[in-house]
Length: 118
Image (cartoon, rainbow, N blue to C red):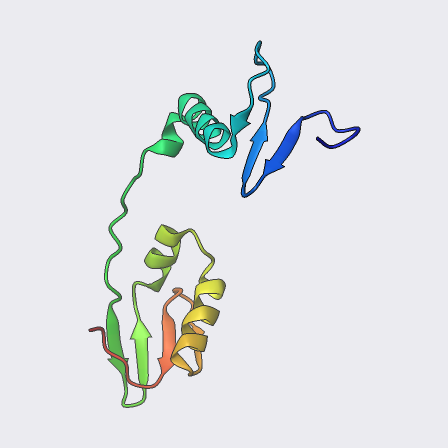
């Protein structure tokens, strides 16, 4: 027990034991029981957190521009689906591909090099 602490927590080997706030009894709960209780309360109060939604990500539409450049034409749509700024995704993609590129006025990514989707 920690002196001056409002919660009573004792460490027994690798399991932590504590008292849940608001309980009438002073029974000690194991860490996993308290964790299960927290997650069940979250599911009760926020049902949208427990449901998983799937989003279909379209494949990148790549078009060759000349002989040395590739244009990713649906780049803005994919960034919106991922809820990321185009600049952030651009810096990630260019770092992963190890090349240079830029965004045009229509938020399409122009990449130096020849790339095609698998």
